Length: 204
Length: 299
Image (cartoon, rainbow over all chains, first blue to last red; front, side):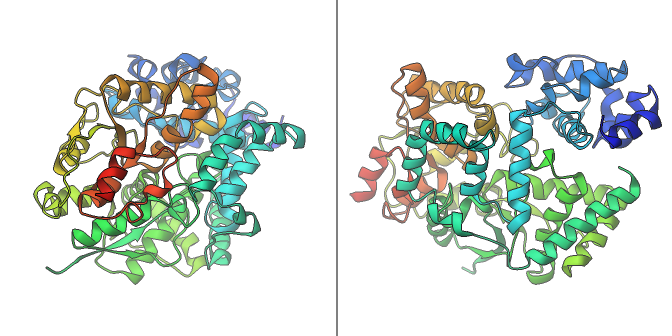
């Protein structure tokens, strides 16, 4: 168990709802859920979740810490915001799902190798390096995340799509040499380091 | 008429050689015809999109967006921040609202921004380019420059998610917004009314990480356009455009379908209707050729 996770368990004992309210983005909304199920019925990836948002909220209230934080379901959000606009109590469900996923990732209890977890990591690392996302390096990062030979297989599988985009000048192989970037990348990186320092100070 | 000035936030996918680079030329022609002056924000950065949350903390994401807002506040006073990208717009607007609502987050954000030599007071409004067209220009004025009405074209208006939710366009419903169909009518084409996949999710960023699940969404979106007799799909979203267009060949490979439905941006329709060439409309950047639109452009 990661240090951060052990600390969180020790700090909140069995009170997972309180932990979510205090440490997860928009977590203070969870107890507002009235279990109507509109979110569960609205989610485009609904058939693929083990736990719908409705269930996740109930599980949080029931103190099912491990089941929630290790769930694959919180990584199934496409950010379509359908649940948000339909929720009769206006819970920011999309943000709570993102918040839970982020929290589970930070405590390192999220499922290992979960594809969207990996994608999110590669995306973020691409953007903080230059201030802007490098689509070529980002795509290659995604295809090669499971090693070189799997990466080549993935690339060959997607070569039709990639060639179509290159022909249309919407994927530039030269981006591998650096590509677009912000001038003040130094300032951006200092700013992001400060944000992390502030959050560590507040223990969130 | 004096041009209206806006601080333009193109976003990563609209850069040269990126997946939505062909969106840009049509935006330029459209805005020129409608007396909209887009001034690019100097040294803008990525908004962290709707997938940055996995690794990026809340404050990190807020400060990234606040940096763009601060650059506008400092360098382009009085101008609204405008993006053509729903993800950029959404992330920026969410940030502006969150910082307005939570004083402590505004203080933390400014403490971090100081490291990049910036500060943000909260005076900048984040808007979508479609909002500018509808609210500041209006449908009547959008019709005026039309010299080549897109007659004989039937178009499925695919609004998608983030242009529509959670903010959407004022006065429109989340379930069945009308503005995209109205824009299609404005340029003289026929909207495929009753297109039931209008606000369905294409899978977004999960098209990368969950391809099977996303391609099921995309298949529905495209097949419904066929069912309604559409010649092409039109969308206001870069990610919708890319996902719905480029994965049709993958779906064909896996499912034995013969999908080949062109997917264009509203600004490409407008550019052609306003008399622009295929190149000016960025139609050379479409992977699936919108033949009927190309025919009108070359007339």
